[in-house]
Length: 275
Image (cartoon, rainbow, N blue to C red; front, top):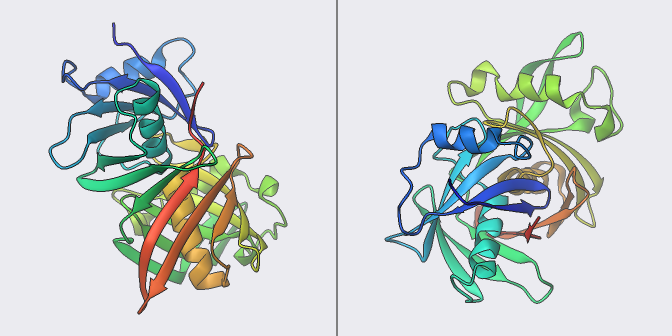
């Protein structure tokens, strides 16, 4: 029987498993079995905390459908919190390995956790994407940002048919899947995000996310929030730091600077707690 603890990062939920002794031969089947247990059906994924040769610890993250080799921003914060809760390490800064990269997780004075990320691997802003929303085909302005996982972002004021004024009007299962499975992003597909800029001068936004592997809406997406903040800064002139209200109602904060057209100091800050 595999022991696990339950954690939430801004509403993104995970089963946390201590695999520091490498006693578990991790695979997708184990993940699906854990998620299918009574009470676990609505969790977004499973995180195995493992030894690392390049960092303090490794976050081995699997989506709920058993697909692995994925990066999860909220999962990094939950992993750092789990390590502290389990008294594995009490350092204020923990270095975590994820998808072959190193992420520094810092416990802040307000009780939240700030995670540093490398610059995006690829960005493409404000391009036209042919999509099917409701009964209309249209060319909508979209942005693509890859911060270790691929994300496509659509600002709702760029949707022409039908016009939408708020995120509650978005049929996320239908429209999110249309973006996530869009032929232009295949074969891997992309996580899909709909964003409303609330106040560009104050850096305030709202976001809804449809995630690969979960194949549905999640209450928050860390790397999606990072990607949406980068796109909002570039396309909509949203001021830094960017504060994104997620579907759970919790706020994720994204900070970075731009030096010679290069993103520097990219960080994601928010809550992580045992549930």
